[in-house]
Amino acid sequence: MDAADLPQDPHRPYEDVMAMLLGTLLVALGVHFYSQALLLTGSTAGMAFLVQYATGWRFGVVFFLINLPFYYLAIRRMGWSFTLRTFAAIALVSLFVELTGRWLSVDALNAVYAALMGGSLIGIGMLVLFRHRTSLGGINILALYLQDSRGWRAGYVQLGIDGLLLLIAFFMLPLDKVALSVVGALVLNLIVALNHKPGRYMGVS
Figure 1 (cartoon, helix red, strand yellow):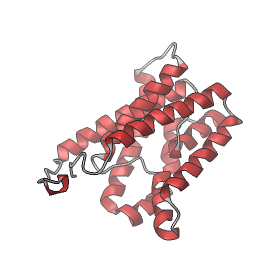
Figure 2: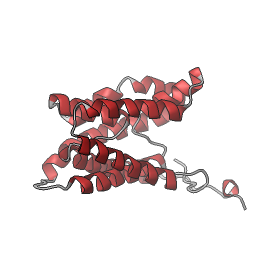
Figure 3: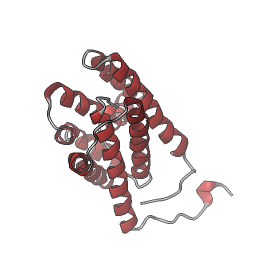
């Protein structure tokens, strides 16, 4: 029997809430590791990191504000349900990043460990959110919108923007930090790519 023919068991509301909390807490912890080690990742989180490193502004506030313009595109592309879930997830990540700094004190953090573990935590957190029809918004929504409206390949748009962020990082961060950020991004995307496949997980929210 094909996976698509199997009966679907929708997520219950409390399951969606638990997944939202767990996913955003994992992402926030990964972001905290990155911030402590002066690393960055892609998409709007990468933008928020660069602004934080350049200005000293708090990541949580910058991350929340950067994502605001993308909600209009999310409504048009994904609908209200997805947009509201995404808004809640971004708000929680922004809050939990600020709180994690108070909850967890790191006196010494190896940069290689921060890249590998931080990328893993963010990837697993995103995977939890994806499986409950939630995202962390931002560039991914823009890429999908441009693919629909302009015919631009979403993957290429995402890659181009992330490449631009990496280029800017070369002028702001030491070379070893940029290299480790690439390693962390590979780990993050590998976790999502290997586990978020059509037919592998049939949960519906």
